[in-house]
View: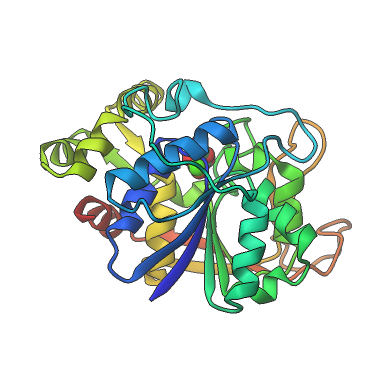
Length: 311
Ligand code: BDR
Ligand code: CA
């Protein structure tokens, strides 16, 4: 059984990732931390509660995270996810409240209570995780592993030409997390772009008469409209559900182990960098001995999309 703490910024694809996990018999969602990113932290927290209510998981605590990135102003993406982060169609807010402790404290507390047991699935800018690390430098040993959606290596970014949203929206936090020594798997944009839900796939969800399918469909309009106009064909990309599916079944992807660093300056701020030289007679490169992380390098997207559909 996989015991998971989620850090997330719902967000349409984050909401779908929660629905996916809620349908996995072998997954225990221990707690959720809400992050800024797609929407402000408070909205993300309210949306996480709403999604949990839909699937009857209203006992799972949701803690709101830090309201801003570590060093840059807050920038959110309502134009992708809708004004309320759920396409404007999420319905009433949950009667439940968020926990009194901040998300970073929740993560540290749970990791200390259950050392070596918990998997962290990070689907948002990494602010809360970086703050948890500052509070508890031993966090990489206390967590079993971390799986994160973030970064772009050999494809263009989706916030700038070079930077993917979760690294672009808090580059310092991403850099702190990537050099910290977690047992860490990255599911970058290179992989998640293959998680394309086309018109027919979405129709099968729309036709499924379950509370989760109805909710999943009700939040889609703005998100599908944006991706459809960007790609010239109807559909959307399910970034975070793909990362969740890979966390549940690692065999959906193949991996490369590499050091990764995050650019903190200039036009490429937020870009994730690899040193891919075969031999180094040239200068520069990653400036420290940070441990390598595992990067998903190929993915069986057809199987993953099938599983997401069934969930
Ligand atoms: C990531 O950014 C957010 O918009 C999505 O929820 C996903 O986590 C994709 O770059
Ligand atoms: Ca997200």
